[in-house]
Structures are given as C-alpha cells and as structure tokens.
Amino acid sequence: MTIQEHTAWNRVLSENEIAPIDKHCDKWGYFITISKLQMIITDKQPTACHKETISFKEGRVITSRFQIAKDIFTTFILMYGVPHSGNRKIHSEYKNNEEDNTLQDIRDAHELTKTTAKHAMKTKDIIYVFGDLQDTPNNSRTFHYGKCRIPKHPLGICKTFETLGLSCTIYRHLDTLEKPIISRHGTKGGRFIDGMYACPQGLERVMGISIINDAGIDSDHALIISNIV
Image (tube, rainbow, N blue to C red; front, side):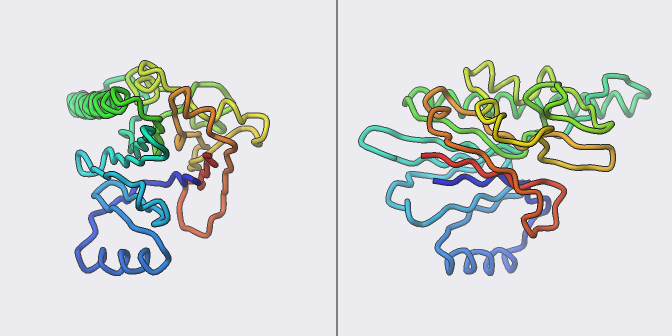
C-alpha cells in the first residue's frame, strides 16, 4: 500500500464541483472523501477491507479504518494541523485575541487527535497519522532552511503524537533522503511539516519514503510518498 500525503483542500467545494471529481476518481479506480479542509483518495482495490471513513471538525481530522488480516486492523488518521507563527510576543490587544484563538484551535485539534488515536489503541489497531501537520519533528537544521525558523510548537500536534507513543517515520529513513528534508517551501525558506507518525508496529511496516518536489501540481508543498507493506 502506498500512502500519499497531501496539502489541505483550502476552500469549500460546491456540489457541482464535487460530482465531477467523484466521477473522475471512480473512473480511475478510486473513491474520494471531500471535506472543507481536506480530501482523502483511496484505491478501490482494498474496498472489501475498508470498514469506515469518518470526518471530524469540517475535516480537521479524517479517519479511515481497514481490516488487513484476521483480527488485525489499521487506522489511518489524516490530520490538518493548525497554522501558527511560533511568535510568542504580543504586540496589541488584537494580537492577543488572535493568539488566544490559535491556541484554542490547537488545543481542540490536540484533544480530537488524542481521542481518535486512543479509540484506535483500544482495539489494538496499527496507527498512522499523516498530513499537513503545520509542525516539524524537531527544531534541527535537518528540517529547516533559510529564515523560516518557526519552532516546533510546545502544544503542537507533533508533541501530541509523541505523548501518545507515536514516532515520526522519517527518522528511520534519514540516510536515504537529501538534507535538509523539506516538504513546504516559502519566500523565507522551508520546513518539513507534511510528516507521518506511527505506532511501533506501524514503524516496522514503512519500507521507504520518497519526496517529489515537482509532481505537476501547482502547490508550495512537495508530495510525500510512504511505502507501507
């Protein structure tokens, strides 16, 4: 199975726009779940193994559960993290309110992810969490370049994954990737924010990671492909 991590769908699609996308995916052997924030495209081949796909908070989190063998299930959690500047300075009352709202959004995403992952843990599912996480695995130069030095957020989603016992899959494949490892490029530099986290059993199944900087799509994000067996 190949998991393609992708950027968020950044506007609401109308019914007239969704229908052609559904038909296009169906023609090529895929089915699609579209939400306000994200979309997930799934190959039809494992349809018999697909148990459910659920979207939460306008697609902030989308979960897909598959049965891969007798009494063995895998839960894929597609996560769109909350953008943050990493700037802790408060310059005005407006800035204070803006930061408070961002922190509340982060906390909400934090709790939703914890609840979703813990539910999967209760049934001993193999867990993968991935997507535009808006956060880096650490603050090292391995995952940054240029003036883009937004730090790993102490309340960010990556920290949440770590407290749940999940690990970033990128660490086991550092030797195969060009440094610095970047997934999102901007005017001030770039960061690796489109990562994947997995439980210990899930880490063993990730055989390789590829980063495609030019996938033929107009995006400031690279395409991250994880090969999972």
